[in-house]
Image (cartoon, rainbow, N blue to C red; front, side):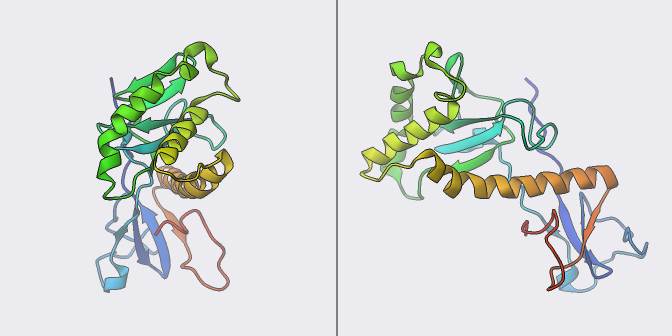
Length: 223
């Protein structure tokens, strides 16, 4: 099976008193056509953090990806999203009309929300068994799937709340979990997608450095 491409890295550098984003540092500034050779330390190019990760490299995490295609290519901001939970080996458990799936591929470009704090080794040791036992209960049989009310998000959040209950923690409702953990990451991902596609179309993207008269652009908030 062909894996989705991770996308090209985005680089930001300063020139002509502008922030310039591209997939690599060009020999000449796209604005003034002068040499971009390094001058000052603050003008050195920096890499923009990629908000997407290979979900199969993540353990004990909540993952989010487009139901069809990938974030960088096909996602339009309105397409359906699919979610899942990884075990300690990067297998993604997710609930569909066919029941609980255990995917070893297909989540290579995901937004990831780690579910365990560092050092929670006791819970990590039991994670895979918890996830497997939870997934084999009758609640997640194929015929119980309902697109709007008993779906992949219901499955993932119910599992998270089962783990929280085991640890004596308060449960999270859907809105609380989404607002606290999902939206901040998807907001950053949306800005990255916009910036990525601008660079793909034009070869670079230019904004003014932040200032009192400058409003936010697609690149703001990424670094």
